[in-house]
Image 1 (cartoon, rainbow, N blue to C red):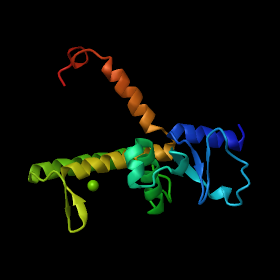
Image 2: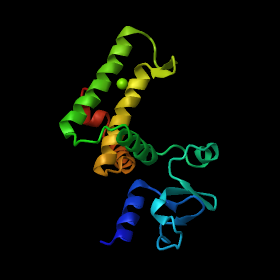
Image 3: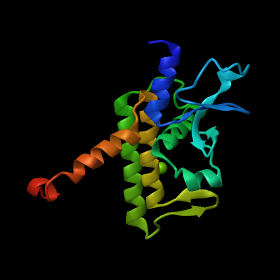
Length: 173
Ligand SMILES: [Mg+2]
């Protein structure tokens, strides 16, 4: 597989519509070479009207057209974790699972101690809902590392769940 096809596959995998740079953008079927001297700095993009915008750029008008997508959050979660040094060394799957567990435990502790679902306290989001958000962030970060497309995986699993029997065939929980 050549580099162009690898990029196309990756863009399709995350659900992006193409690439964009400072002043231009292109669709997934019309990628390189485009002649832009800065094409190596292009990032994954989504199409808004006739324009290509960075995939997870938090712009109000984009949120209207493109509600925050799981695949966009996944890229962001992994980018942030990498930028903070959390992937400077390899981490094992079991280490990641333990950390996901720790966020669940933090959610349990918040729930045990108060009715505080989630709030900003001295600039920091805290509470039961926030710890569950940490669970999702950690899962998405790891999925980003592994190249899994969690948006598609969640969609596929939910479609399957819709077909399952009442209480999945009589299970107690
Ligand atoms: Mg936490």
